[in-house]
Amino acid sequence: MQSTEPVAVPFDASLGMAEAAAALYPDSRTDSFSWEGPRWWWAGALDVEALVLDSYQFLSSMLGPNAAFTSSDAVATFNSLAHLRIDGRTPQSFAPLSGFRRTNDGWVRLHANYPHHERALMRGLRLRDARGLDATLSSLSAQEAETTITQAGGIAAAVRRREEFLATPAGGVLAAEPLVNLQWHDTPGPRRASPVGSDPTSLPLAGLRIVDLTRVIAGPCAGRILASLGADVLRIDPPDFPELLDAHIDTSFGKRSVVADLSASDVAQQLHAALDQADAVLLGYRTGSLDRFGLASDELLERHPHLAVLELNAWGHSGPRRSIRGFDSIVQAATGISVAYGTGDDPAAPDFTPGALPVQALDHATGVVVAATAIGILRHRVDGRSARARFSLARTAHELLSLPTPPASATQRQSAVELRDTDSAFGALRYVPPALRWGGRRLNYLTPPPPVGSSALTWR
Image 1 (cartoon, one colour):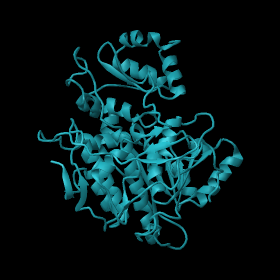
Image 2: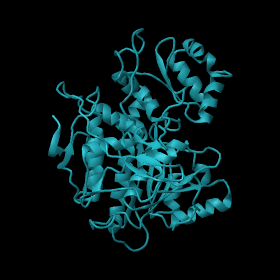
Image 3: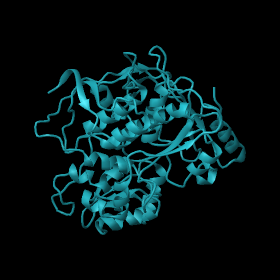
Image 4: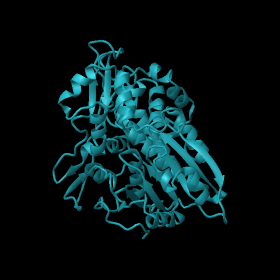
């Protein structure tokens, strides 16, 4: 039933988040937490609601007793792009070539939202245009399609059962990893006070500086949360592979935007000068792709040991998939989620059709967990410590798949979504505000999303 009164919720549905919260901030509220609103929104095959609630409970627990949220507000942020309107226009979620396609023994999921990934898809399948796509895929097995497209630099995953994925070397490694892989180290210099404020009349992260080197949804959403809490977040993008504009608008509220060619030595020097003065850095590119710029996490920790380094990717940081490109939808297909939401349990059956989560919950939950972990690490300045933390969409998928399935009594119940309006460089925006309440008041973003590349690579 829908709840309108605070409900005590044990913080143990997602054990990975509870364990991480206890490790980061032992005084956090890890026994129970109260929130208002419906417990069930989708009541689907998996308990996506628990993933939403636990991730926001994790975030709230890192901030302390002045933080709160409702289930309705938290759920709305997990679907922020769908609610966004840009001068009345609905943003594009998936390009025409992205989605499920049949193969000769099952299904494969493609991701071709970015132009360079679409070109890689065509190149891998030796096609000039999309007219021959379905015929070509129908001549291949799902695994052959995945391998062919991936080796060409494209994005694809065979639709598998969960047990099939866990039986692979990548799945076995992933299941053994913690949700938040923390590596602590001592920081040089005198101990400093925690930068996380507790005054309910001012934003808790005011004065913090965050370098955001992430793309797409998970990492940018983590930066968006930190910006909503008062941090100065500097998002940096390369000039040759721009972010999709609608994704930039959705995830860049409260940030500043830099376009920088890190291969230029003077720009690299500017970046490291900014990192010298930063409190945390978010890394969200494919494993190894930033190494040539001196931004491998090991090098960052050696050069900037004061930093909290938050590193996320699609498939984890060990095992054979660690350097492969991936997205939320692709991880769903590979790990068994698409089968859980399909019409049956055998992807090879002729009447089987794969399905998907009601929202891109792997991206958003990972983003919330990254933001929470950054706050938890920064609390340890008083101990003279910092840390590197690693995350992956696939490990978040494993967390979701490990939750108890919703009970038969669960039914879909939704509340109205609170939206706000602002003018921006992109026109009039209607958007979902941050889910958190601080000192009893719901937060809002301090600024609308900025024009791409409108800021210099310096701090305010």
